[in-house]
Length: 112
Length: 112
Image (cartoon, rainbow over all chains, first blue to last red; front, side, top):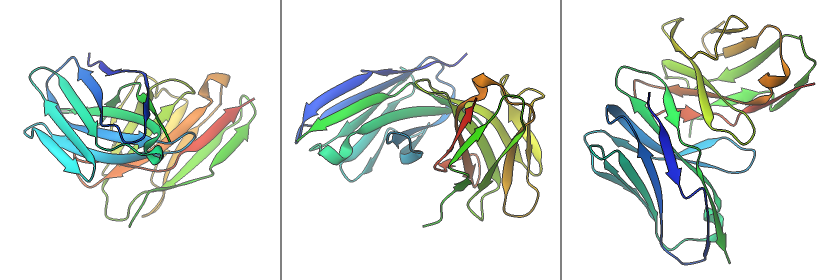
């Protein structure tokens, strides 16, 4: 059974720092991996999607990497801003399945 | 930019009552999903729907739950007899293929 784990559970950094959020999964038979942002009481905003054949994806200050064989993904946020404060979720889509399996998220606070 | 919409944003109901949560997926999407997030817990998959039938469902999706696409635009989740433990945020999502899922803002269901 696929398990998705995110470390750390919470992170507080000063504005301007570069930071890395970690996601690991136990079963490498994934189709793709998505990173989402969730603001308190709100929906999920898709940030980046990496196909299983890809190594990384970039969007603005965000860069996501995927090492499928070791079951790891990282989300790198450059030059963090207070507006980046949110919970970041990773989720995997398995081969031959329609369901996303989510991690429990990393709650990020960027202090001005 | 097209987006998934959900109504209502907040629904309060009494235990044992039936509720219907509504979603309008992105118009050219063919795959539809429901997820839920109990407060403080992971986002969990409930069901996926394609070509007017359920393509996958989780063990949570028991006989109390049903989904329907009553017309060309709406996608609904019905809970026949709500329980206290059904209180959660319910998210609808849609996708074009076995690919990136786009989430709506959610409906907060409170069962009293």
